[in-house]
Length: 166
Image 1 (cartoon, rainbow, N blue to C red):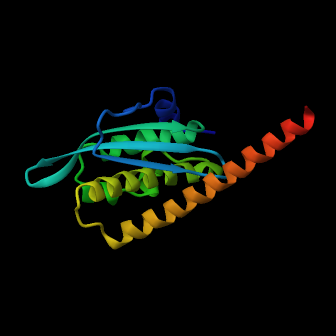
Image 2: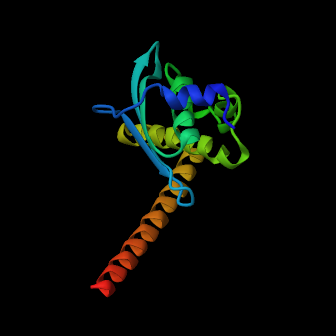
């Protein structure tokens, strides 16, 4: 059963939608459950610090995935890039008053999408990318390639099945 906070963010997600001309975009997915998230950020210099001034998301997934994405955007808006990178899945879980154990991975996807958006922003602006973020990106990139390969294999098998029925 979902908490009131989860249901609130699922029923009325905050910061939902695409962003025009984002400074960074993060895309992540989970091949097992099928959830896919896009997180968009706008970054501006404020008082000498790079601050996330706007954030949006699109999520294809369950109630927990949508609520986690929404809550992540609420937690990150107005934070510096460094503060945003410090947000953990535990922070998202706490802010949502928890998730059922089988849905905890949804909060992880939201923070991974955030990290990917920050990575994208830093790379586009030729800024230093912390080692942990580079390693995170490489892992996500590998997982995305594996997911795309499995999708292509699935589509080929579907095409073969359809051609056999003709």
